[in-house]
Length: 120
Image 1 (cartoon, rainbow, N blue to C red):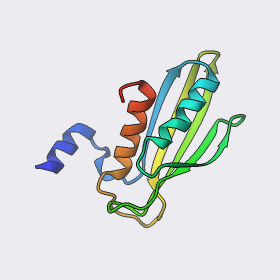
Image 2: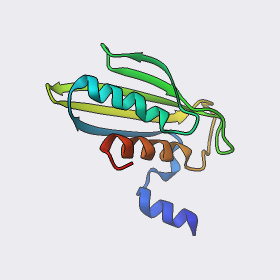
Image 3: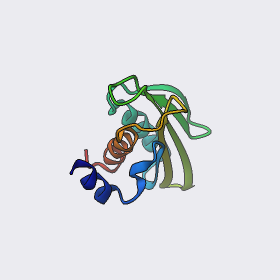
Image 4: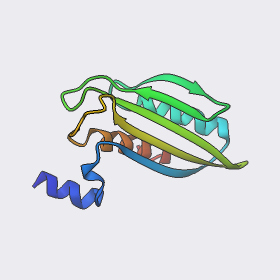
C-alpha cells in the first residue's frame, strides 16, 4: 500500500536512487545562492562541504541513517538574466553501488524543493 502511494505521487522517479530537479528562481544571484546553502541544512545531518559563488556550485552531504550510508547533494546555479536563476540540484548515494535507498534521495530533493519555493 505504501509503495503504491509513492508510485502515484512520484510518477516514475521512484526507482532511481539518484534524484535531480531543475527549477527557475526569481531573485538576486546572491540571495538564491544563500537560500541553496540553507536548503542543505534543512536535511537531517546535512552539511556543506564546498561552495563556489563564481562558478555557482555547492557540494554538500548527509550522514548515515538507517535508510542509507549518506548522500551527496550537488547544486548548480546558472544566471539566465539579472533576476532569474536556473537551479539544478541532485541527491545521490555516497556509495556508488547502492541499489535501494528507500526513497531517501527523493525525500532530500522534496525537502530542498519545498524550502527553495517557500513551501516549507
